[in-house]
Image (cartoon, rainbow, N blue to C red):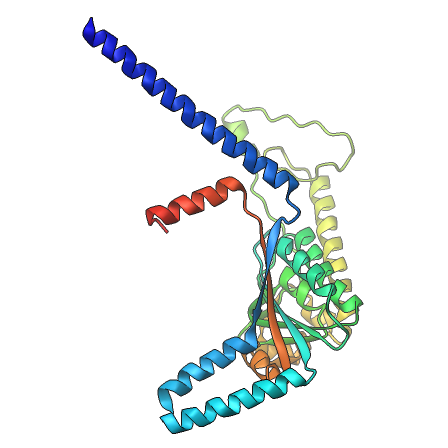
Amino acid sequence: MAFLSEYGLFLAKTATLVAAVLAAVGGVVMLARRGEGHSESRGRLDIRHLNDSYERMAFALKSATLSKKALKHYRKEQKAREKQREKAERRRVFVLNFHGDIRAAAVASLREEVTALLTVAQPDDEVVLRLESAGGLVHGYGLAAAQLLRIRDRQIKLTVAVDKVAASGGYMMACVADHILAAPFAVVGSIGVIAQLPNFNRLLKKNEVDFEQFMAGEFKRTVTVFGENTEQGRRKFQEEIEDTHLLFKEFVKTHRPSVDLERVATGEHWFGARAVESRLVDELRTSDDYLLAASQDADLYEVSYAGKKSWLARLMAHTTESLGWS
């Protein structure tokens, strides 16, 4: 009996402890949700002065290679340049980065970055977008291109730099720019549209599985993964693909009128050196070289927007870091 009494007391203590922990967690969840619901800022805008980064790298190298006398002379000259720069009115270059996936998910940050820029940018400023994307969904990249058009509409110079790839939807974004740079072997172009899907209808029939689909509207669904596709549906789907391609070509023609669409709008891609010949890009140059040269007479600011993470994502990240799993 004494054992049962002690065991019962142990269970009661355990249940009390579990209840207390659950109550505490529930309170944290409610506070976190309440804080999210009333938060004015859903993310954070980070600004990095690239001129300072370049100067720090230069100083690190000179510290390792110059004599003490030469280094002292360099530091003296550097301070003089800094004073002169503070007095002079220099133009500003805002640097953005877009790393696109098939959904163009980075447009969520891009729209915030562009909005922030347009609150301060002046006509003599410049925006440089370092773009990397092999394309993806039409509506996602259409929105991304529309965000860049907001910069052009304000009469602010827009330069797009392609170091690796800007194809299909990526080129839809790039063609909006006043000036397009590309590295010699960057992949550019692919002005085309593609859609593909498997069809399991014969497999379902073989296994005596029925697939039923109900529609209101003759072309609500043209081709399907599980149903039996018809020639009429295929023709309609092909028409939609070709119309999307036509809109893509018209968009490029509007912003790059010098491009010979009959030659380049075949869905093919070109390396940077060939893309210059086709007027798909304007200059063979890396973004690094362009920005380093611009830093001589301009202040460079890299702008990036990080969306606010949910309380659970922050908790998991903090736990992972604490346990040393990262």
